[in-house]
Image 1 (cartoon, one colour):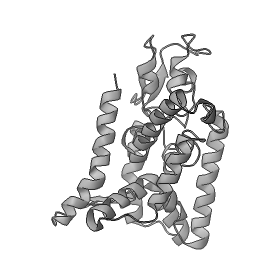
Image 2: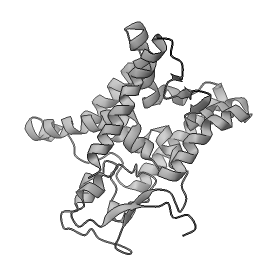
Image 3: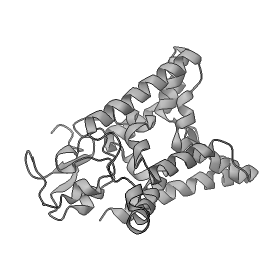
Length: 274
């Protein structure tokens, strides 16, 4: 149900990676920047983790910094981690790696491709990724270098797209994306988004009662509604969506909703004052 729309949005975001620098080549500057920070007319939008590192490095929160982070925060409060599940270009690549991995595991290297996600359990996974975010932020503040930018997958992809369009080459940073994808393809499925992505960790903190989320129409579900447990098998974050739809790991990718044969899983939220 949601899958075609999600793919369309993901490919549109990937298209922007190359389209924005093409516009700039033709001296059209109504939209500039990368997924680290982007300017749409006079509106400046920056990844909140970039702002967080700048805050720790300088010790000052300025109005421009606050304004640049405001839109992503409001977006996260309304839609949850839709950025991760629907827009992030790295997530699209990770989806592709997962499809290829399933093919290789089924046809060629079944014993060499472990099926289990690294760091089982949502609590442990959240501890790891928030620990990584905190450690990176502290180091960035201590050395005054935005170290988390070097592992900011969508920002790197966007920057490499700009470099490729303008200079017909790529920088050494592209190796980071290659290595992470190869690890996801072989021994560490879905590890980056589940355990390390600082942007995904940070924006997941901004949620309220009205934030878009996955809900189960059954009250207090303790077991899946089908013996096959389709929703848990479909979740790339290793969650049990029938009872963990509001977990901080959930990206609202809707794979669980599409896989639910009983149609008990659905979007909830936007109930201001409920």
